[in-house]
Every structure is written in C-alpha cells, then in structure tokens.
Image 1: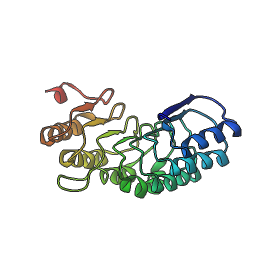
Image 2: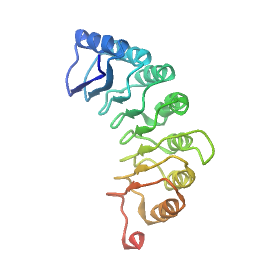
Image 3: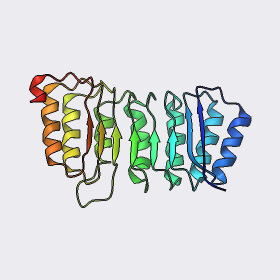
Length: 219
C-alpha cells in the first residue's frame, strides 16, 4: 500500500475516527497526519500519540490551532517523539505550550533523528523556551539540526532572547528558513539578524513581516 495522508480540520473527532487514525498509523500507511484545530478527548489524544510513536512511515504531523492544549498532552506528545524515528515536520502553531511545554518537549525534539522542520508560532513562548530552541540549531561541525524554524507571533520573547537566536542562526550549519513575522523585534534586533544573515552559509529565507522595522533596518 502506498503511504497516504489523513487531513481533518476543525472537526470533533469521535472515538471511532481516532481508532481508524491509530490503525492507519500502526500499519505504516500514513505519511501525513493533520488534525488541525480538531477537538478530541484527552484519552483519544493519548491514543493518537501512541500511534505516532509506533508509526514507521509518518513524515509530517500537524497539530496546529490548540490541539496540544494542556501540559499532559504535551507530555504525551513528548513520549511519542522519543519513540518515533520517521517524523520530519512538526506543526504546533497556535498551541498554548508556554515555556513549561517546551521544557517537556525539549529532549524529544533535540534528540529526534529525522526532525528538520518545526513550527512553534503563536505558542506563547518566552526566553527560556527560546534558549532551548537555540540548542536545536547546532553550529558547524556538530550534529544536524533544524532546517526550517517558525517562531511567528511570540511577543513574550525579549530582545535578549532574540539576540541569542540571531547568534545561533549565524552559526547554524543547517538552517535555511527562519520565520519571525509578527514579533515586536524593532531595529536593534533587525541589525543583529542582518549580521546573522551575512554570517550564515545556509540561510535562504528570513520572514520579518509585521516586526516593527523602520528605514534604518532596511538600510
């Protein structure tokens, strides 16, 4: 059977539907699973995570828009990622993770052997979380790291946190796409990012839409 995709958006998932998803995951017949904005019980979320853990084919997982809605769900996801070996792309945009959620996920994300694309936009993150994320951008000569990182709309991160990210991006041996749109960066951070762009040998895309830049940054 050729790998398939399961894409559901904004639905209330029944136990039977979750069972079908889990069976498909365990049969290694799913390459893409998206339950974006869906509602399901904590028990069923745990079942999906166990299916993710057992899947040998899953490459992309989309849990955007509040599916990971509690610290207990974050822990279920972390456990799944520690066992899974196939996932390349993880979308968690719009999940109320907070720094505590990133602490729970950090070990699993950092040690995952295949993960190269991570979306943590609008996840209510702060400086502690960003420090952990910088660890997923190892410098030249170190282990492979993220190639694409989205941190859109996380206004709780301070200038010091963004400065740390700029340094990590400058030295990353893998990062190609960095999305920082809708964060209040301002000209000072933009200047640091300009240095990072000049220093990086891999960065191809930098999204700075809605970040409060002026003509000074453009120059």
